[in-house]
Image (cartoon, rainbow, N blue to C red; front, side, top):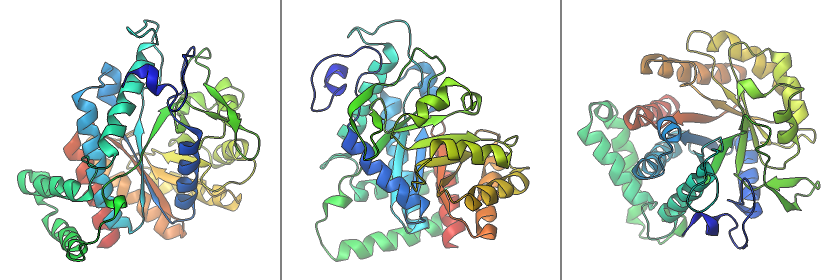
Length: 354
């Protein structure tokens, strides 16, 4: 399937700029799942390969990334005991040079990536939970990182064997949905591709991606990016860091979620392992008191290196929410190092299940 055919699933014709990569119905489903995560009924796994994005790689790295995403999601499903919503990362910026198809290179790369993801998650593909479980078993057997979680892996294996003993056929175990997310671009000319179809409040969908987020450098309350974000019906993310003030977080959430829709906004916190326990609690308290039901997502790789500090922020994130009685609704992983991503998934599952 070519990028031109992906630009409008179920539609024809070529558009300028970001063509249609996703469908409104898909975004509606993600909205429902993000609302569930905000209520504590689901968990959000957002993951991407920053190195592959920088290199424009949409080949084998995408296949590897999808496989790691599925593996981590299975482990987190066991750990959280709720459905895991999976979001992969699309490139954020358009390039000036066109691809052979005439579309900007990053759009063509995003289309190719989504084609790969869809092919890998349909029935009779690698998305079958039994196949994913075999990969996890191999990871535990063949890596030093995996060996540290052998006992947890055995517990997951017992659950899988129990399910297999019932010999039932369930499509939900053979397929899955992976949604696409991207950061709102830095340049004003990269306008969103809006759909004529609108949500129940009359707000149009941005069909360049299912999920959109604003980076710390683009969330200026008077800037164009937050204005673009509030003009679309897609679920939105907002990066917050150690210098984010609680009042600033509340103001941004109010701007992006005027109708108090659960899961409309995801706050993606990267505070650093040494500050998360001090900086995050007042933000959580202020936002919760405002009445907005957001998804609280940990982004531990943004402020930390090496992995020891990444794991420390993950622990701190869960400790803060446990102490405040709020729900830690998601994790954001960089799949550049597959072993590190899997180690964090097992760490979270171990933290939650004991």
